[in-house]
Length: 267
Image (cartoon, rainbow, N blue to C red; front, side, top):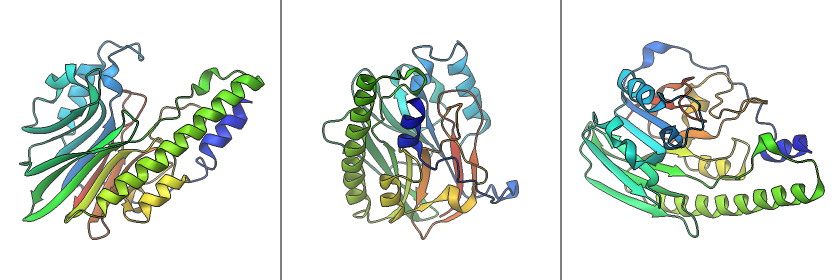
């Protein structure tokens, strides 16, 4: 039964191995990092009390021009004090999405999703005399504990129902976000925890409008989620077709159940 659920959720996710650009000399241009921080381990999911300080050290060593955080927790703003400007939107319990940068933020906003605590936020920046809109989004999760599935019919039906509801929510969230993106007067960068793989409907809908930087400059499986059974890529950086990617990296630091990802872009 657990294998059936895994197949439903992540069909084909482990077949996509990218042989790509490993040239580390292309670290030039605008550097964006995206990371689901999982509340900076606020509830001690990882048995390591140093996660917040380790995160601060990691960000200091790899400081991007812009940091997009999903599952940000307001109690840990001190970890991000090196960034001059920020845009934060909380959705209860001091949790939400945030954007941090040294660039001046000329405009900012929120894209709310109906009947969900998930959302997207955006900022407008001027980079090399060109205005860019950067989105940070977090889509609905499946809310399924894959490691503790019970092999009985009642549990199976409950899991399938959760998956169905999540797919419906993700489709609605994708439509809302895409409708906002296509109206942007500027080039777009989208950092997102999609909570779904590159074979999903919502991924393909977004990719119809934007380019996936991993596909252009990444390599390997690109796994971004800590799941021991197979590599899963559910975190992405998308860009307008007129933006040129230079470099992409997935970091292996154990700071969350997600891995940080970053891209260098020629705006």
